[in-house]
Length: 234
Image 1 (tube, rainbow, N blue to C red):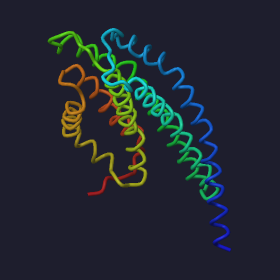
Image 2: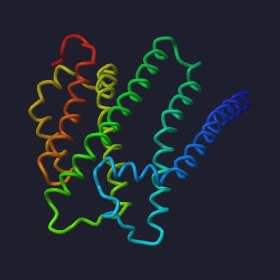
Image 3: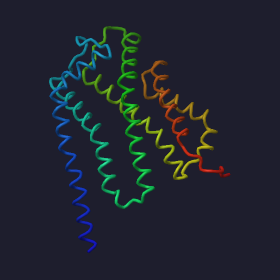
Image 4: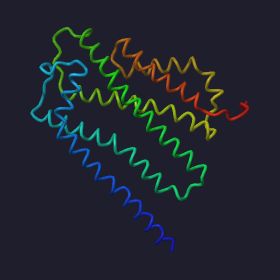
């Protein structure tokens, strides 16, 4: 009887995930078909002249389009995957766990969108413009793959960083961390944020500050959203 139940659950889970493949395929194909316009729009937005962008190999342009399509597909499909898994496990949850899980899922999706948007709209543009105007000894000729990859990596990094807004409340709610004690380590955290920002950004103070602001801001917001778990334990 247990084996039959297990198989039925597995079939239901597989059915839910298979339905995700259809929108994933549609997103991938549509992004690939319009990838040339999307990449051109990105170059125009970050103020990089198209005549200064090159392809270093015969297949670099199509590889860039495929990479962009794959990244965009994962970006849209991952939240769908999480919510599908939530809907699958929802019957086994009590009302409180159900409400808390849904709240964290919506929160993570929202802050990921905020971080990703900030990465494209502000961070990538400012960093690339700073590099063009400050650190070039000659006219820059960058490959299309390197530019698109930098924009995607920067945006993804900021989307992940913004998850701190939900991770800290979750850990505090499970009593794995104590927010009151965490607040005492603010100076150390600020130094750590500045060091990490310097490591993952180009060597200019503007880029480091732009990365550090949402990095540390997400930490503070995460503590603000955390509920007080009572008396601090010694």
